Image (cartoon, rainbow, N blue to C red; front, side):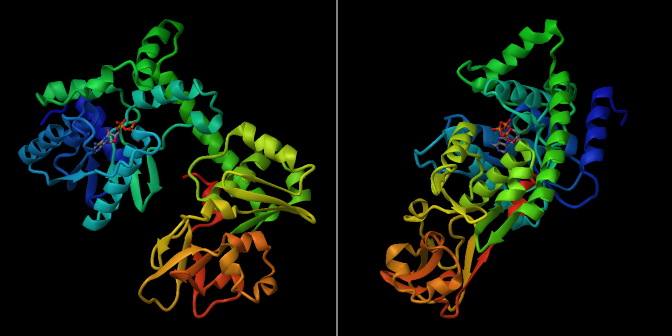
Length: 408
Ligand SMILES: Nc1ncnc2c1ncn2[C@@H]1O[C@H](COP(=O)(O)OP(=O)(O)OP(=O)(O)O)[C@@H](O)[C@H]1O
């Protein structure tokens, strides 16, 4: 078949970013971008997936539309349902996280290592505008990567160089419909306002293409800063059983930006947080540490030591954190040992540490041990591997500080 110019552009984007014939997942919401992705990928070994968040009355019909489109194209499709909203925090954010998690679990279950998403150059540009509104720096203005590993999956975004209009033109050319999400016109959403603002900015020469190019440059600056932070960490930072110890002299000799990145990475790693602390809060805490021996920030305890700073988990932040003995605790710990009924992982706290006569011999500060994981059976402490009461149990970290420094 003779390909039109727009179909050729889509095909070129796909062969550059989705090579090989291993099975590929494709996340399809039913909107124009992801339906174009689906149609352009038809003919390859693809498995489509839709998440029904159950948040809008139309969601079920949208998932059905994708299922029917896939059936027509002869492609396997599955709808995953999310009913996990607990009423806490930001709904859009919770829905997005749940979506990636559900799709990653689905992919793992199907033996699929790569999943394609329909983000376009317009998404990239709108994100830049929205981030500018929040005074973003290099990280916030960095482009989404065309390829990124997260949650055990490689996420591909083959259409980041194409416009939304290109994708719609392709669909129209093929006679393929899509679903227009009514919230795309709802000016209460920042993204919709950003889209409108872009049109207003066009006479100044500020275009989606230009903003996406800026975002790509920011992405490479960010990668360079992360590499410099990693190099700095290698001689300034030391991991100590889940804590991070930063050598004061080494830290002071770093460029401010690199020192800040290292501190933020350490705080996020210790607290298993996806988000950095607010810049003002970090500055205030560091200033407070000039006179105070310790301060808390971001669920961490920062303590001055003889020649450095120790960043540990804040005991109060994990006082209520509970996991089954075979599950991940506090986002980064796994405990291995003789399993038994009714065992769970909780922080030692005062009560637990009181049952660890040898804790001083571990060399860890008391505060670090209070926040360390223990194996409990009801009110009885069974084991505390970091506090000298191992009873056949070992505590292991599932991530490293270095992994936290490099974002992708
Ligand atoms: N409900 C859904 N089911 C399956 N895939 C989806 C769904 N919603 C979005 N996607 C996938 O994600 C892509 C981006 O969608 P959208 O821009 O709405 O995401 P977002 O909420 O802005 O999240 P992100 O932070 O990833 O940009 C879509 O092109 C599609 O591939």
